Every structure is written in C-alpha cells, then in structure tokens.
Image (spheres, rainbow, N blue to C red):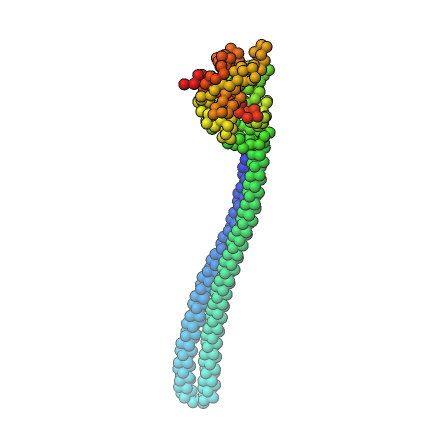
Length: 433
C-alpha cells in the first residue's frame, strides 16, 4: 500500500511537471504573439504617420496652388492694366499726331512721312505690348497649369503610395497574426499530443505498478478470508485464511493448542495451532479468531495443519447448537457435517470387544488416554471416542462412559471428527428419553 501511494505521488509529480511545461510553452507562444501584434501596431502607426505627412503635403500643395492662382490673377491684372495703358498711349499718340499735324499745317511743313513713321512706331509699340502681355499671360497660365499638374500628381502618387503602404501593412499584420496563430495552434497540438502521450504512458505505468503492488501485496498478505465453501474447495497444502469462533479446545502444551471451531456456514479442526499459554486461557467458547495456515488431510480428517497462526478479532460470541445427524449415519451425507457439533439420538451401547465390556481404555493402566466405546443404530455399529485431551478423566462425559452398560440406550453430543470414517469426539452422554 505504501508503494502504491509513492507511485501515485510520483505519477502526480510527473503530471504536474508536464502541465508546467505546457503552461510555460503557452506563455512563450503568447509572448511571441504579443510581439507580432506590437509589430503590426507599429506598422499601422507608421502608415498613419505617412498618411498624416501626405495630408500635410496635400495641404501645402493646396496653399501653393492658391498662391499660384493669386499670382496668375496678379499677372492678369497687370496685363489688363498694360492694355489700358496701351489704349491710353494710342489715344495720346493720336492726340500728338493731330497736334503735330495742326502745327505743321500752321507752319507749312509736310509731315506725312513722319506721321507714318510715328504711327508705325506706335503700332509696333502696341503690338510689342500686346505680345508681351499675351506672352506673360500664357507663361503665367502655363506655370499655373504645371504647378497644378505637379500638385495633383504628387497628391495622387501620395494617395496611391498610402493605399499601397496600408495594404502592405495590413497584409503583413494579417500574415504575421495568421502565422503566429497557426504556429501557436500547431505547437499547442504538438504539446497536447506530447502531454497526452506522457499522461497515457504515466497512466499505464501507474496501472502496471498498481497491479504489481497489488500482486506483491496479495502475495505478502496471502489469501483473503475464505468462506467455508472456499475453504472446502481449496486443495490440500494450499494457504488458507478463515474467521471462525472457538467451540472447545484440547489441552495447551508446548506453545500449541488444538481447537474445535465453528461458524454459521461450517466447522474447522485447528490442529496444534501456535499459541501462548496466556492466550490459550482466552480461547473460551464463543471467542472470534482469524486463522492463517495451510489446509491438510489425515486419514480422511480435513484440518488446518500443525503450526497455524491466529489472532483475536472483534465479533459477537457464537456458540453452535448440536445438529441431529442420526439419520445421516451410514450415508455419504454425514461427511458434509465433518467437525461440526452434532447429536445422535437413541443409540444402543454395544460390547466393545470379546470381553463383553461396554468400553475400553486406550491406556488401561493409569487412564491417561482416550476412552473408546461402540453404539449401534438400526443394526449398524459405530465407533465413538472420548478424546482425553478434550475431556479428561475428571469430566462428566468421561465418567458417564465409564458407567455405561451394554444395551443402554443413550443420546450423545460431540464433534464429528473423522478417522478412516466417522469417529466423533463425544462431549456429552445422557440416557435417551
């Protein structure tokens, strides 16, 4: 059990380390995702800055266009003023011409050629002024147009550049996020598979270790407590464990004691069980005990072999009542009651041997051994015994058998011991009613 707990703790530690690794890996992947997210934010900020700068340039271009338009208007006004001045000059020339003509007529000069020369000169001046004004207006218009085209081109190029930059930043951010999410998902799946593999391996290891621990524990503990049927089914020399109640004991001697025990489901003969003298005094009828030993068989008697160990256990006292097995005498059913407290009714005492005695001593000299007698039922004769170490010469049953006469009809009680057939150890003899 202790090994089982240690293995369980080791498995728990392994799982804890695995989940810590998973947790740290997830945190690292989250940090990478946060870094990619920050880079995307920086790209968007750069895009916004470029957009702001383009908008500022557009504003400056608009101001430049406005200034150019104002300059164009100024050139236009200058041209109009020049036209007015030319018109005024023409009028003045006309007046001068008329004045000169009048003066020439008064003086009698011919000024026709001069007049024509002046007229031609005035016309040339006019044409020159008109051409200058026209060239200036065209130059201003061309300059304004070029400025306007330049501004529009710059604004369009800036807008296109901003759009392209925005799309690139967007794609970069989306790709970065997508790659990061895919990488995290792949890494998570890998870690999940790895964790599941470790957990499954750990579970298998724990299960195998638990089975091994259980097997070792079962081997160390031996068989579990048996029912009487399980005990009966066990093979000779198999280890057995039973819980039962003391019904009687033979005399304690040299650290051993033989016990007649019975449970509600069957009885046991515990031969030479290990026991201290102090504990022997506690093995009174009705006491619950747990016995560990080996199953044995001797001349038909099924018993727990010499050297079994026992311990006292909690349990209400149990005293078996004698079962009347008279009708089972001479049948195969009788052995099913082996070692139980049984009763025989209306038995007739028969001569034990050719001397005609009703009983015989195993040790007639000093009466320190078993006492034997024979009884019959329905023409069949049976050998019974008073076991000296169970019921000695000073007990009532020993004295009652010594007082028997051939032909007496008696009732008997005792434990159904077996020795090459039924050989009950009698504990009580009374006259039949």
